[in-house]
Length: 248
Image 1 (cartoon, rainbow, N blue to C red):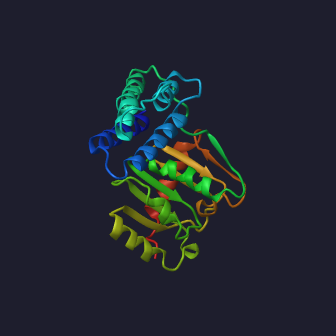
Image 2 (cartoon, rainbow, N blue to C red):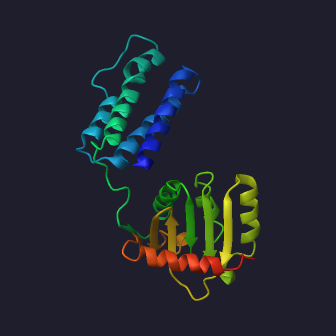
Image 3 (cartoon, rainbow, N blue to C red):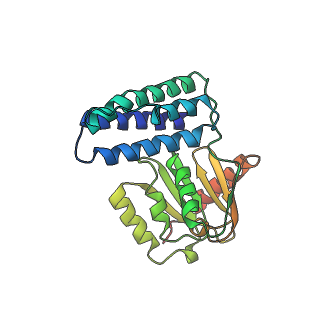
């Protein structure tokens, strides 16, 4: 619930900024991006028949439109109060346990072959939800990992546990530059010489991947959330992390 409320607050803040800025040169572009993000938010969290999704949709697509004022005045009349009001209604229902949220991600996510972009977006959505820890365990990493890690919220601890001989020669150098530029709390260690599986821990969630994260979407595979053996697996991964030397 914390994730959906944080997204709501972010959307409300962006909408307030848009309205406070007034009819600046690029207000239409900002409006279109924000409306699209609000619609994606509703699609992500609510079933199509949900009253909360309907509330948002009615605000985004009103039955009538103002036509006699300037473009900004018409937009303000039609959407200025309607959209934040709808978002606040939805927020109130979530906080009071009245809204039924969709599962943020299925227990198993099928990765179709030839889908590198949508697979990357899927991973990005996972890491963007982190608030404390990203722990990536993969014997086969490459430089593309830093594009993914650039989406991790500030202040989140990032751990990478990989296999020394499989890492690119300048991986540690690029990691250092990444930390220098972004301020990320990133540490890389090597300790998977006898370990083949790939895991991604995000706060209290743990995911298993049938393919290396750098190759996700090249071939068919599955990313599954680990439940029954999560505690045991996390304990093993933590032990390996604690005994692993720095990546060189």
